[in-house]
Image 1: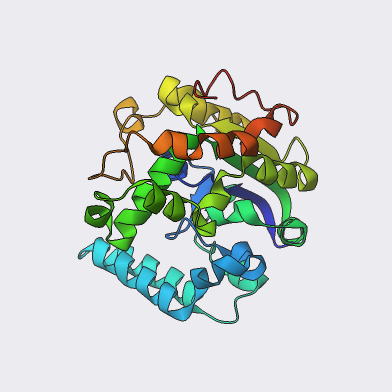
Image 2: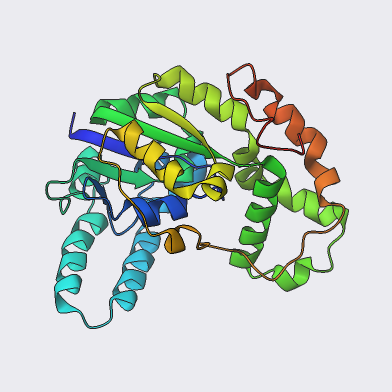
Length: 283
């Protein structure tokens, strides 16, 4: 085992993981690398995630971080030191460990990637072989809201927002049912795999909706799960949206396109002990 304390955020996609990262990275016991989504385990164990650590992908990431730094030479030195490890081959367990070389005395190495939600048993056995103490959070969101946010975000990334303004039911349905989007809606399947591979002390299931209700309490719950000090956070920053997708209104027909299928995907949540009904009024 290479890492004493590993903290993974495994999604769901468009359910607040970037917001969580932006606040927890200020915690003195939690270390995030420059790239919050290292994607290491998905790269090795999920066929749809091979792009995450390709040479071109890693080079693009480093260029983006350098551009954002401006002219702070000390910050640039630290980034370049980390970049050497991030760009190094081979990509193996020691590569993963070296990405956390700048963590200092911080207790947890943190790595948040929604791609980890799709790891199989072999992938999770690999994760557990790397970390002595493993903590995993999975945040779920009202399925129709999450799917719409995901679709809109993907359209923005693809540069197709204007095109989608003229779409009908067929186009939206086919776009939303693409496997790389739709698989993020399979909450019960994902949670079953997580529960099979992780014990109650290792896994915490959270609701995105609780961020809006009480953001301070939400973050403190994660801190308690990690057994680190509770902190007070800037409430103005807590209510600030991140990675917000703009420029496209949800069509009136959208919910009816997917509601029945999403209900089939999530109705097993109660059997798993997940009481979603008090959170998600549409279901």
